[in-house]
Image 1 (cartoon, one colour):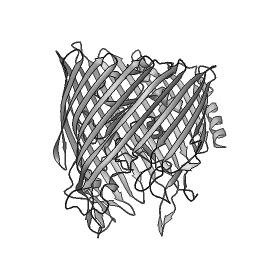
Image 2 (cartoon, helix red, strand yellow):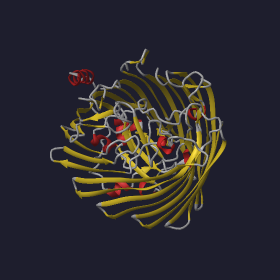
Image 3 (spheres, helix red, strand yellow):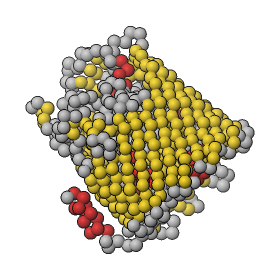
Image 4 (tube, one colour):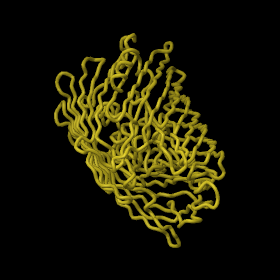
Length: 630
């Protein structure tokens, strides 16, 4: 019924629209592996460079990979990166990390959307049920596993996710996307055009519904979501530089969550808005300048946990200067956050209101030692109000063995700076407190060593592999309640490997796959009384792997198959699972595409996170999607 209603609404809205003027996109299987290696990225060095030359463990989720996977949300799109751990907690919440420490408030992974940092500063993590984009406008998602603190700052410890949307010049005309199935449905509309001779614009609207999950006992979990979002982007290009102005506004609401004894757990309600402006200029001497600023406001009403209202103002600039064999990149930024966190049934922040600021300066020198050898040295000074100035250095060396082989190694120091969750949180909201933030909590520190290799031995095959060691100190720990405080009494090491490859089996068939291996050797420092130890830092699989097959069939038909295996989680125990997904797509003509998607086809339901028996089970799902260029 829901799908039929949405389809009728789509055709009613779209029928009067003009003919398509959108820019055609090439298929994943149509791009050669040489072209894929030449895809330009910006997240590793904050400048444009070829993926094949990047001295980092970086995977690019392309726009066509997103389309051919049939995913409908940003967290599900991130599953396509083999160097991320993505676990679905319930209908709308996820635990997402790289190289371990995965939990619902993952605080060692920096996430950006078009240069806007989207983690909540009071707990250094991401509310994934509040972050969304119109996936059809995403150009690529750059996923770096490993630290990026020198260029991106604190919290870029285990990785950086940078979601990059297309310029408005690439999204002229209209586009409508509608889908529905047994787990929910989505409707998205976008239209774009020209602004004079040098400008372009687009605007979009989307609505989505996530149906509730069920527990292992078969009971409905009160976690369904309704969400609406609007946004725009405008771009101007000329001799005076490039200018971008964009923004979004959203609102979401969960279903009613029932009662906890006599206390009503009303629906979680979220809302927010943001606006970003960016100007960039390339000069005739080869130097370049970029200035960016944004304002971001978000609110969350959660009667059980707490209800934050956060306003963020962020400004940054960077300047790149070529000097012979050197290329100097330097810049700085200022970030200010004001929050008001009202108590919930279980938690409160003391004080409830706080204003914080962060100031940073970075410099990096890319030195060309020879035709095949390059070194990069950099450092960042970042000041926060809890621990003062943190120093974040890095050094990288890359060796181009041949035009198709790259060896690189890196050392970095990264920190996860204290947040209000570490210093100011209390349980329960009124004294006497069972658990309280630690007034002496300081930054968590990682010294990271990496070695990577990237190669394309034949025109039809390429691969990338990285081994790493993270040496940790002062990780977050606790004490036995009552009167427990947050401390820094865990250290140790995490180490492992990550690899992925692409094989062009035939002109219309491509195989790709990847795997990660992770080992943790963490322990309490002498004097700690933490009863749980490292178990509270995250819950991670020792391995995971995925394999994707993309076929281009005759008559503009597509068949995509994906299999992924995730090892068991240790504590709380979550069984290993294998997911089998399938998508069949048919481009009826150049403007209309219909696809059918099935997920977890060989498994009726499985948990991915949290403890039994109340945890959600992620069930088998089916989806029908219509994509129409207007």
